[in-house]
Amino acid sequence: MLRKRELNFWERIYLPEIIRGVAITSRHFFVNLFFHSAHRLGLFKGKLAAVTFQYPEQTRPLASRSRTRHRLTVREEGTPRCVGCMLCETVCPAKCITIVAGEHPDPNVEKYPVRFDIDLGVCVYCGYCVEVCPEDAIRMDTEILDIAAYSRDAMKLDLHELMDPKLRKPVAECKLKFPHQCKIHGNQTRGSWKAVYGEQTCAAGSLEPQD
Amino acid sequence: MTGYFLIKLALASVVFFGVLNLAGLHTWVERKQSALMQDRIGANRASILGLRLFGIFHPLADAVKMFTKEDFIPAGADRFLHTLAPFVSIFFALAAFAGIPFGDRLAVGGQMIELQVAKIDVALLYIFAMLSLGIYGVILAGFASRSNYAMLGSLRACAQMLSYEIVLGVSIIGVVMVFGTLDLQEMVRAQGKYFLGVVPLWGVVLQPAAFFIFLTAALAETKRVPFDLPEGESEIVGYFVEYSGMKFGMFFMTDFIETVMVACLATTLFFGGWQVPYLRPEGFFFPWGAHLAVSQLTYVLLGVGAFMLKVIVFCWLFMTIRWTLPRFRYDQLMHLGWGILFPISLANVLVTGLVLACFGNAN
Image (cartoon, each protein chain N blue to C red):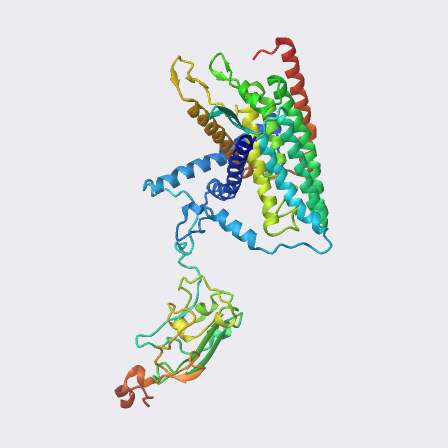
């Protein structure tokens, strides 16, 4: 048990302790004032005068394991690595992931997401989706933290933004070539496999089931 | 007569300009100094055409915000008194400055102008009267708001300010006894003497105990942090909780103006007012025998500069104390006022009286 210490005479008369406190804060004041002034003159740049990060201009370094906004990893030809196995949708405790799987022309892939939505307004950033993914298709390493919007709808991400973290709302044009339900074009199905793999490959049937 | 009127008007304008600007700058200093003391940077985003100047435009932004905010009067509140309260508060705080001498006599066109807005023989009493009347603003604010929290806040304010007013009054009796006058200009002149020709005989040298008591009680009068029980913005809710917009701003400004007032009083009573060490009307007379002649205008301007410098140093000190010490508890506050400061100030009066009786008016 921590016993309450009796104050000695000098502490009881209070004045020396006030002077001590004022001395500490004044020391901080003058030391910081000196370094701020020195920084203005281009001196002592290595010594910080404040612990502040000037946020929008100067972001704080993030830990390498910190979980930030999701992204879907992309194959060389520009399709998502996701195979539509629904593991992330199943494991998600917040139920913020919606996947509609479609058939992939490559028999080794089998499925791919026609739609992949994450509602960031619901997401709890637990990272289970990243843990559970067998294909390393979803990651939370975009270092995007400033997720804020004026409507709940604007918090919902779809394939466009998830595959290209640089895209921010409102997304103007659709650059995805493979067939997907495009939110930008009123949930119409857009794109074709021919646009991804070229006429020949598709016509030669090398992507069709072999046996 | 017109000339006299114009001179007084000019003096009043100068004092108002100085005081209001200093009080306005206090909001900036408050942000920046607290930031520096806490290893932060502080508000620096307000800019005019991209010019930031360390956030010095934040007070301007505040003013724009205050003036454009809704001025809300709660249902059931006394509309007249509710509106009157902040004006009473700020008026008396500003009126008190009339008694502060901020420089020696200035000779302009054959006229000797005392750099003091109102030449009152009992300037000290006048200032204390004005500061006491300022309490009415606080009482009215709490009473007219029709809010229990505001009422309780203003009751706390009354109790605190009345208690510390007494301590404040008794603490300066020693100073008055030593200098033998209530005229602040005369009091400052009396502080132009030297002990052994070296140490300036300022009030703080003659009355050190009175200085500390005065400083504590005066800080309590400004209702700022170690003594901010009447306001307690974030936790205990103060007397101006029902005020918004510029009326709130006026209460806010009153605090800063009172801080400047207390800094002026401490300077005048204890730190030689406009006295510059070793400077006499004819020039500098240093204790090691050197002599440097200065013109009359330079002498007066140096005095005004010294006064301002001292006031600013005190403002800095008050700001430092405000950002260093935590708030007192109510019983601690009352104990400090009545149990500690009051007896010490009475003892100070007694000891001063005895010393003066035994050794005569030595200074």
